[in-house]
Picture (cartoon, rainbow, N blue to C red):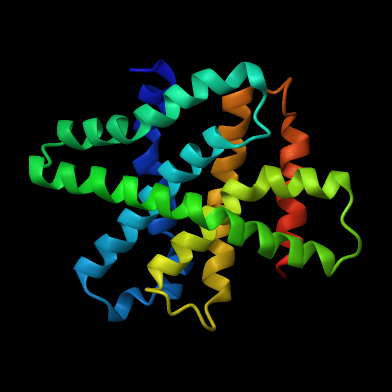
Length: 209
């Protein structure tokens, strides 16, 4: 297995748990009024969001050519890497198969959703003036993040997203912090400087206020 995948697989659950245990997140998800089963489902969606944002990043057309081959290997191994972690925790085989199916399903879904997320990004940008090459580059760079954040929010809310903008913004901020870290790890600071990615992420958050 790709060495990067082994390292990433160990972090996925912790990244999801960070948001899952946040009191504000729990309040926005109405944890006081939902079952343990529903809480578990929400945690699973957070885990899948972390995995799929990495997978979509590996597919991004603006990834540097010298990183693409390795990142395709990372993408193909990521689901198995996380499932192996679950296996080591003693999770039953039938549930491991369900995880594989769900990850594949969400990845395919979010891959198809990228065009919708791109249109939403263009709409937001157009409200703030003309779209130049710099803004086009930022839209492309942030597309994996926006796509997965929108999808994760929709699934957590069971598609009932009206009046739940604060929850979306919280998911976006949480996932965005991890996305920045992964993007830099994936390509190296000399290819995509940390400052450039952070600037794009901050501009995205400002537009959603």
